Amino acid sequence: MNLLKEKITDSDIILKLIPQRAPMIMVDSLLYYDAAKVISGLTVTGKNIFVDNDKLTEPGLIEHMAQTVALYTGYHFYINNLQAPEGYIGAIKGVEISKLPSVGNQLETEVVILQEIMDVTLVKGTTRLDGEIIMTAQMKTVLKK
Amino acid sequence: MDKEVIIEKINNFLIDEFEVEVDDIAPEANLTETLELDSLDFVDLVVAIEANFGVKLVGEDFIDVVTLQNFYDLIEKKIS
Image (cartoon, rainbow over all chains, first blue to last red; front, side):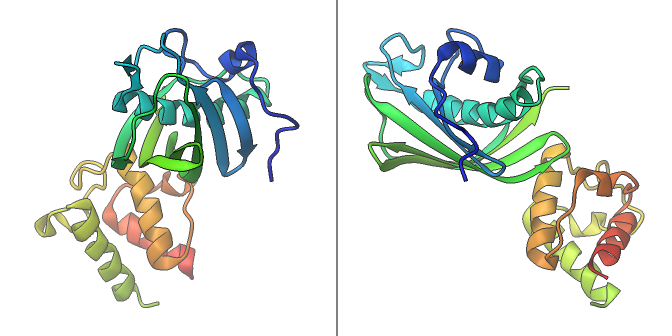
Protein backbone atom coordinates (compact mmCIF):
# COMPACT_ATOMS: atom_id res chain seq x y z
CA MET A 1 0.00 0.00 0.00
CA ASN A 2 1.31 3.41 -0.96
CA LEU A 3 2.13 5.32 2.23
CA LEU A 4 2.36 8.64 0.35
CA LYS A 5 -0.72 10.81 0.60
CA GLU A 6 0.24 12.28 -2.75
CA LYS A 7 3.12 12.10 -5.19
CA ILE A 8 6.10 14.28 -4.30
CA THR A 9 7.22 16.36 -7.27
CA ASP A 10 8.41 19.52 -5.52
CA SER A 11 12.13 19.79 -6.21
CA ASP A 12 12.78 21.46 -2.84
CA ILE A 13 11.30 18.47 -1.03
CA ILE A 14 13.13 15.99 -3.26
CA LEU A 15 16.38 17.74 -2.30
CA LYS A 16 15.58 17.06 1.35
CA LEU A 17 15.19 13.35 0.61
CA ILE A 18 18.48 12.70 -1.17
CA PRO A 19 22.05 13.73 -0.39
CA GLN A 20 22.97 14.42 -4.01
CA ARG A 21 23.11 17.96 -5.34
CA ALA A 22 23.11 19.55 -8.80
CA PRO A 23 24.25 18.60 -11.33
CA MET A 24 23.98 15.04 -9.94
CA ILE A 25 20.22 15.00 -9.31
CA MET A 26 18.85 11.93 -11.09
CA VAL A 27 15.36 11.66 -9.55
CA ASP A 28 12.74 14.39 -9.67
CA SER A 29 9.70 12.75 -8.11
CA LEU A 30 8.69 10.19 -5.52
CA LEU A 31 5.62 8.37 -6.77
CA TYR A 32 5.25 5.44 -4.36
CA TYR A 33 6.69 4.44 -1.03
CA ASP A 34 6.13 1.59 1.36
CA ALA A 35 8.37 -0.47 3.62
CA ALA A 36 9.47 -2.75 0.81
CA LYS A 37 9.12 -0.75 -2.40
CA VAL A 38 9.69 2.68 -3.84
CA ILE A 39 8.94 4.20 -7.24
CA SER A 40 10.73 7.29 -8.48
CA GLY A 41 10.37 9.42 -11.58
CA LEU A 42 12.80 11.31 -13.76
CA THR A 43 12.24 13.51 -16.79
CA VAL A 44 15.34 13.46 -18.97
CA THR A 45 16.44 16.99 -19.80
CA GLY A 46 19.08 18.24 -22.19
CA LYS A 47 20.99 19.68 -19.23
CA ASN A 48 21.40 16.27 -17.59
CA ILE A 49 25.14 15.57 -17.31
CA PHE A 50 24.58 11.94 -18.31
CA VAL A 51 22.95 12.89 -21.61
CA ASP A 52 25.01 12.43 -24.74
CA ASN A 53 23.63 13.02 -28.22
CA ASP A 54 20.16 13.56 -26.74
CA LYS A 55 20.23 10.10 -25.09
CA LEU A 56 20.54 9.27 -21.41
CA THR A 57 23.59 7.04 -21.22
CA GLU A 58 23.94 3.74 -19.33
CA PRO A 59 25.75 5.31 -16.34
CA GLY A 60 22.89 7.78 -16.09
CA LEU A 61 20.35 4.97 -15.91
CA ILE A 62 22.39 3.21 -13.22
CA GLU A 63 22.78 6.42 -11.22
CA HIS A 64 19.04 7.04 -11.54
CA MET A 65 18.34 3.59 -10.08
CA ALA A 66 20.87 4.14 -7.28
CA GLN A 67 19.28 7.47 -6.41
CA THR A 68 15.91 5.75 -6.28
CA VAL A 69 17.36 3.62 -3.47
CA ALA A 70 18.65 6.84 -1.88
CA LEU A 71 15.12 8.23 -2.16
CA TYR A 72 13.76 5.19 -0.33
CA THR A 73 16.25 5.56 2.50
CA GLY A 74 16.00 9.35 2.53
CA TYR A 75 12.21 9.35 2.79
CA HIS A 76 12.40 6.92 5.70
CA PHE A 77 14.81 9.30 7.44
CA TYR A 78 12.70 12.35 6.44
CA ILE A 79 9.52 11.09 8.09
CA ASN A 80 11.60 10.46 11.19
CA ASN A 81 12.95 14.05 11.08
CA LEU A 82 16.46 12.94 10.20
CA GLN A 83 18.75 14.22 7.45
CA ALA A 84 19.09 12.10 4.31
CA PRO A 85 22.19 9.92 4.72
CA GLU A 86 24.98 9.69 2.19
CA GLY A 87 25.68 6.36 0.55
CA TYR A 88 27.26 4.73 -2.42
CA ILE A 89 26.79 1.86 -4.84
CA GLY A 90 28.52 -1.23 -3.41
CA ALA A 91 27.84 -3.68 -6.20
CA ILE A 92 25.73 -4.13 -9.30
CA LYS A 93 24.88 -7.33 -11.10
CA GLY A 94 22.55 -8.55 -13.77
CA VAL A 95 22.27 -5.18 -15.47
CA GLU A 96 20.19 -5.40 -18.63
CA ILE A 97 19.49 -2.26 -20.62
CA SER A 98 17.36 -2.56 -23.73
CA LYS A 99 16.87 1.06 -24.68
CA LEU A 100 18.39 4.45 -23.92
CA PRO A 101 15.81 7.16 -23.14
CA SER A 102 15.77 10.38 -25.13
CA VAL A 103 15.60 13.95 -23.90
CA GLY A 104 12.02 14.65 -22.88
CA ASN A 105 11.26 11.06 -21.89
CA GLN A 106 9.81 10.36 -18.48
CA LEU A 107 11.22 7.40 -16.59
CA GLU A 108 9.67 5.45 -13.74
CA THR A 109 11.89 3.23 -11.66
CA GLU A 110 10.59 0.68 -9.20
CA VAL A 111 12.97 -0.63 -6.58
CA VAL A 112 12.04 -3.58 -4.40
CA ILE A 113 13.99 -3.99 -1.19
CA LEU A 114 15.19 -7.59 -0.96
CA GLN A 115 17.33 -7.31 2.17
CA GLU A 116 18.66 -4.65 4.50
CA ILE A 117 21.42 -5.60 6.88
CA MET A 118 24.36 -3.80 8.47
CA ASP A 119 23.93 -0.59 6.42
CA VAL A 120 23.79 -2.56 3.17
CA THR A 121 20.60 -2.60 1.11
CA LEU A 122 20.08 -5.23 -1.56
CA VAL A 123 17.49 -4.25 -4.14
CA LYS A 124 16.01 -5.33 -7.43
CA GLY A 125 15.29 -2.44 -9.75
CA THR A 126 13.17 -2.03 -12.87
CA THR A 127 13.10 1.09 -15.01
CA ARG A 128 10.20 1.71 -17.38
CA LEU A 129 9.66 4.12 -20.22
CA ASP A 130 6.00 4.51 -21.20
CA GLY A 131 5.34 1.20 -19.45
CA GLU A 132 8.08 -0.65 -21.33
CA ILE A 133 10.86 -2.15 -19.23
CA ILE A 134 14.14 -0.68 -20.43
CA MET A 135 16.45 -1.65 -17.57
CA THR A 136 16.65 -4.23 -14.82
CA ALA A 137 19.42 -4.72 -12.29
CA GLN A 138 20.24 -5.94 -8.84
CA MET A 139 22.15 -3.46 -6.74
CA LYS A 140 23.73 -3.21 -3.31
CA THR A 141 23.97 0.23 -1.81
CA VAL A 142 25.90 1.08 1.33
CA LEU A 143 25.27 3.87 3.81
CA LYS A 144 28.32 5.99 4.48
CA LYS A 145 29.40 5.87 8.12
CA MET B 1 17.67 -30.90 10.92
CA ASP B 2 20.92 -32.61 11.93
CA LYS B 3 23.87 -30.38 12.60
CA GLU B 4 25.88 -32.33 10.01
CA VAL B 5 23.27 -31.47 7.38
CA ILE B 6 23.33 -27.79 8.37
CA ILE B 7 27.11 -27.69 8.13
CA GLU B 8 27.12 -29.45 4.77
CA LYS B 9 24.52 -27.07 3.32
CA ILE B 10 26.38 -24.00 4.56
CA ASN B 11 29.71 -25.27 3.29
CA ASN B 12 28.18 -26.08 -0.08
CA PHE B 13 26.84 -22.61 -0.71
CA LEU B 14 30.01 -20.99 0.61
CA ILE B 15 31.92 -22.95 -2.02
CA ASP B 16 29.39 -22.62 -4.84
CA GLU B 17 28.10 -19.07 -4.37
CA PHE B 18 30.83 -17.29 -2.43
CA GLU B 19 33.82 -18.88 -4.12
CA VAL B 20 35.35 -19.91 -0.80
CA GLU B 21 38.17 -22.42 -1.24
CA VAL B 22 37.41 -25.88 0.13
CA ASP B 23 40.73 -25.92 1.96
CA ASP B 24 39.84 -22.70 3.78
CA ILE B 25 36.71 -24.15 5.31
CA ALA B 26 37.32 -25.10 8.92
CA PRO B 27 35.26 -24.52 12.08
CA GLU B 28 37.87 -22.12 13.45
CA ALA B 29 38.08 -20.13 10.20
CA ASN B 30 37.35 -16.44 10.63
CA LEU B 31 34.39 -15.46 8.44
CA THR B 32 35.67 -12.05 7.43
CA GLU B 33 39.40 -12.74 7.29
CA THR B 34 39.99 -16.36 6.35
CA LEU B 35 36.90 -16.64 4.17
CA GLU B 36 37.25 -13.03 2.95
CA LEU B 37 33.55 -12.24 3.30
CA ASP B 38 33.02 -8.47 3.29
CA SER B 39 30.00 -6.48 4.40
CA LEU B 40 28.44 -6.79 0.93
CA ASP B 41 28.79 -10.57 1.08
CA PHE B 42 26.87 -10.68 4.35
CA VAL B 43 23.74 -9.53 2.53
CA ASP B 44 24.12 -12.46 0.15
CA LEU B 45 24.76 -14.70 3.15
CA VAL B 46 21.44 -13.61 4.64
CA VAL B 47 19.71 -14.30 1.31
CA ALA B 48 21.35 -17.74 1.07
CA ILE B 49 20.37 -18.65 4.62
CA GLU B 50 16.78 -17.63 4.02
CA ALA B 51 16.68 -19.64 0.79
CA ASN B 52 18.27 -22.73 2.29
CA PHE B 53 16.85 -22.76 5.82
CA GLY B 54 13.80 -20.49 5.72
CA VAL B 55 15.02 -18.20 8.50
CA LYS B 56 15.76 -14.50 8.27
CA LEU B 57 18.86 -13.11 9.93
CA VAL B 58 19.29 -9.53 11.08
CA GLY B 59 22.45 -7.57 11.80
CA GLU B 60 22.29 -8.21 15.53
CA ASP B 61 22.50 -11.96 14.90
CA PHE B 62 26.08 -11.50 13.73
CA ILE B 63 27.35 -9.67 16.82
CA ASP B 64 28.90 -12.79 18.36
CA VAL B 65 29.73 -14.50 15.08
CA VAL B 66 33.46 -14.57 14.42
CA THR B 67 34.24 -18.07 13.22
CA LEU B 68 32.52 -20.47 10.91
CA GLN B 69 31.67 -22.60 13.97
CA ASN B 70 29.88 -19.58 15.49
CA PHE B 71 27.95 -19.29 12.24
CA TYR B 72 26.98 -22.98 12.22
CA ASP B 73 25.81 -22.61 15.82
CA LEU B 74 23.79 -19.50 14.98
CA ILE B 75 21.92 -21.23 12.18
CA GLU B 76 21.30 -24.34 14.28
CA LYS B 77 19.87 -22.16 17.04
CA LYS B 78 17.74 -20.18 14.59
CA ILE B 79 16.09 -23.17 12.99
CA SER B 80 15.57 -25.16 16.19
